[in-house]
Length: 213
Image 1 (cartoon, helix red, strand yellow):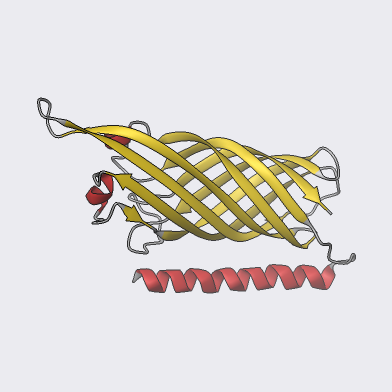
Image 2: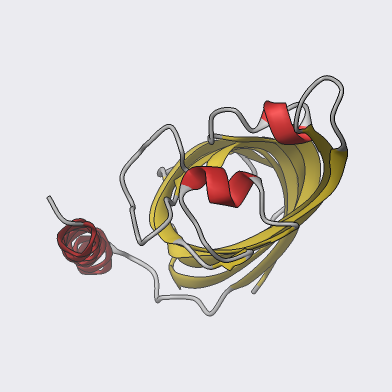
């Protein structure tokens, strides 16, 4: 299946799931839809999926922060915006006795999607799951690992998708702490399927959020 067809199918399925979740919740809701704004920050570990990344930049794991902003559609449904970035330096040796190249890698991305919370009383623990689109920007100097992936440019902007799950506990009506797990996938040339050379990866972290009502 072509990448464009995969992207179209994913967007269509996402819209269908979103419509079912949102309108079914609105139909049975017993309270008015609130106007909510959620702001939060995460600290966790990210592992890039691309194979052989460690041969150029060492460990595929990176500790990084993440910013989250959400807008409430219903008491348990949110549109989420998440963003983060990291930079790495590495060395690539042409041979054991040959010269080496100092490498610089900068990767940043945004995720836009839908999050659904499980039902539960206020000030209690509840789970959530979500999905959406991921937009990456990567710059490498000089062009080494990206070339190994098939790119002829040191700047690429692959697009893909993400899915997330989490467990959240509310300490007050407005403050919460959650354990988040986010899996993203984005290949070069608009590839969006899970693949070994995805520049997305796995993020696991703790997130503190403030719910503004």
